[in-house]
Image (cartoon, rainbow, N blue to C red; front, top):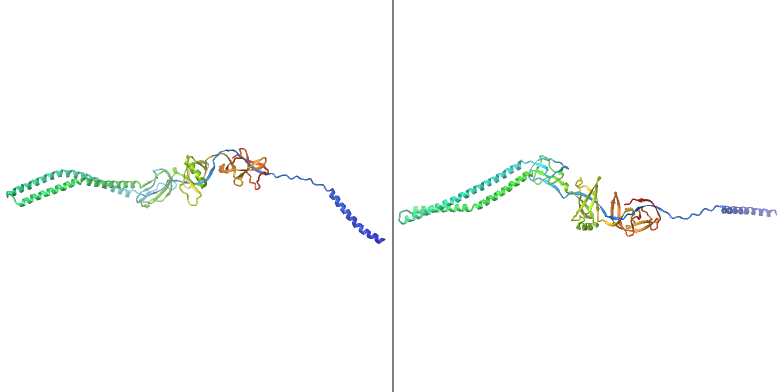
Length: 420
């Protein structure tokens, strides 16, 4: 009996402990407080926006130009001479007609004197020929009388010969005297007849001598090498005491009043610009040099396309006062194209998928397709010039670049961009 009780006790105690444990676990679970349920909320993305304003605006091209000039000269020596003086230096501004290089004049002055002597000699020969011509005309009259006298003497001797009152020798002498007088008359008449030819020959020689004299005087004047225009000296190729030959370079300079700016225009814009120029439209570009702002006008397009170039060069001139720029300086240009009505400017960051912007409507994103007309550069920043049949003035457009931008995304405007 005792053994049976002991066995029952051994089974009952663990069973009670298990039941108590189960009971305690149930009580703890039942008495545990229930946490409050949370309702899932939609996330709001903080963004920046810009407010649109419709207006007529011109697309702009940003171009990199280089200052050049069609008037750039290399001055050369016209004569062989020694360099006497160089009154100017490289980089110095000069006025038209100002002496840049002066050559020694001694040798050229001697040549001028020689050419002058040649002219004087020929003028004297012309005067002599005129005097000789007048004398020949008078001599012809006298020789005609001598021929007549010789002819009468011959006739007289022939009559005497018929009466045997003279000899054959006297007849021959009379005939010889007549022939001599006739030959002298012929020569004198030939001299008179050739007067015009001799005068023409002497006149031609005189003209040639005068031309050589004029050339020598030009050479004398060219010993003072002068600036052909107002400009800036870019190089000096000689020094005092150096002997230079005709054709050798002495100095180089460019015209400051004829400066142009050459800039390459993208090929996709060339045809529109060419048509605008053909219609007589004025295309204006702006540039800032230091704190000053200058306007330039597109004159013309280059007649060639350089190999490998992505466009055609445009040539601009300064519209008003020309700034103090140097040759080959680089200049940043903003070329204004034809204005387009009802356009908007938006930051570059507003563009998605090349032709889409997001408008903010009731705190959510709405994609709007746009047509990109070009760029605008305002206040030192690049903007996109767009048109859209959907957008209106006063609309807010997303500026912040969101990686998950899509229709209906909830956003919160934290900062608005100023009106462009």
